[in-house]
Image (cartoon, rainbow, N blue to C red):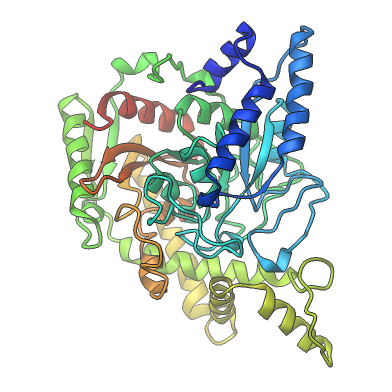
Amino acid sequence: MFTTIKEYHQQLLAGNTSCEATVNHYLLKIHSKKNLNAFTRIFGDEALKRAATLDAARNSGAKTGRLHGVVVAIKDVICYQDHTVTAASKILEGFVSVYNATAIQKLLDEEAIIIGNCNCDEFAMGSTNENSVYGNVLNALDETKVPGGSSGGSAVAVQAGMCMISLGSDTGGSVRQPADFCGIIGLKPTYGRISRYGLIAYASSFDQIGIFGTSLEDVALALEIISGPDDYDSTAIDQPFNRGEISFSDTTLPTPLTEKKYRIAYFEDALQHPSLDKEIGTGIFSTINKLKTEGHVVEAVDFDLQEYIVPAYYVLTTAEASSNLNRFDGVRFGHRTKQPVTDLTEFYKRNRSEGFGKEVKRRILLGTFVLSAGYFDAYFTKAQQVRRLLVDRTNSIFNDFDAIILPTAPTTAFTIGEKTDDPIAMYLADIYTVFANLTGLPAISIPLYKHSNGLPFGLQLLTNKMDEVTLLQLSAMLLQQYKNN
């Protein structure tokens, strides 16, 4: 078919394909790969109807949108008007959104075609996509392995060629980690870069819509379109992202980069952490040495807060989840018990006990505990202080450096069921990704390496807030010069 949106649009204008033929291609791919369980809903008839309308408009000479006919999949936590959105939870079974998320509306305004909702961990809580009411998502590269989470379905939809790009959400790495496990690109922008209006909340001060793709230029285009201010979201940043500052060539290498030299930091303790797979550490150090050889400044910086990152993240996110998920009580919408009840309290208990899965219950209980009167200062307040220290330390690093290099995950994709009985081990697997969410930084996972076990792994890059231009420029250079080298 094609490898980028730009190439697809060229074929459309040349009359070599059509939006309708393209949608049919992806519907067939989705059907042939349905065992991967990447989708919760397919909007096939609707997508074909929209494709036919777009074809007719284009053929009549009408101006086309920047995402004209681009087939997009969306995580089942993002609201799409008149379509079900369930957060992969029984408690939202059958719920139909009455409005579009701002990001969805911007996609539609530029003539994208939304082909379906993607499976995910329930309420975006998980790192493996094993916590869904719809069942596990399978990694297309090895169906015995997890695809990562919580946006595993969105990652696999791109990985297995079932759409061109997809949207996920990233609260602590839920776009970057599945991108790493699936061998694709996963971008989490600066907090507030993309409006959260219409994104079902897990932890509101951490959540951010992110983008999956196989082409960096496609990811940058999607970011440009869905970013920007929003009257419905007070945390949305007024300044939109302008990819015009990056000159992409057909090989995705920004042309000014051949002379540009970067100042890059890395945390030596992070790259020597006992949980990090030796081949992943070796691969990243190899890239660091190549960058030095090419004339870039790459230096280790002291970072003595690493052991506090994961505990602070889980204290704060579970506290926010406890508050955000209060609204799901079975009264106004969603699951309602069929068992007889004697009073309102029992009614709430049954609705929530039946509707929420094990991992969501665990995080609600933990969050309620850390917010309780006797423990608020000991846990929640301390975690907020750690967050403040992390932000201050990060600001000081970016006074001297353009970017930070980290692993995305400590291992390649692991076997389904391997960590389900050990939630602490599961949480510690987020050691490298939650840092960006605690500090609000933009971060990306790019697929640079292949492990001796045959599975891919990526490199994670972080830049200063609002500096997605540098993040994408550096990513493009690395993908062009160092992938699989």
